[in-house]
Length: 184
Image (tube, rainbow, N blue to C red; front, side, top):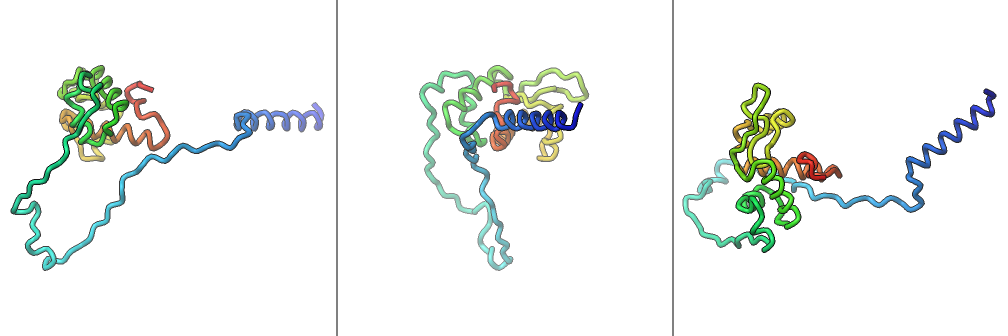
């Protein structure tokens, strides 16, 4: 092989790789919108004299009226609809498309039973826990970092909040949030 032939082949290979990598695109690539992140919380330190009389929780109670969460009519007859309010309170959006998919997941994974436990082949009593069947082998280290135990996954609020963190974390990274449940 001559030097000219080698350089020509190398140049041709580079050009083909560059063409494939850019996708033959002539228009600029548009970025996807940014997913909203949690707000920054600041803590202000007070001296003991500044907090005199400010007990928490307050000794007197006040009644406030909170508008009830209203769900779309088409959601009321879905399986696991009884868990939608818990899901929304745990962080899930009150969005019919999201709640329909969440309903399918809860039905398929646990038949809407908060105490669902799939059989395990390891030292854990369950392989998957709760409404969304959070997988022990894949996530137990994350649970420990969050201060959660596998038994905490039987609490519907904890289970759905953790599922929201898993879903929204993937969405924030530009991935499909439903992938852990094979809905992508």
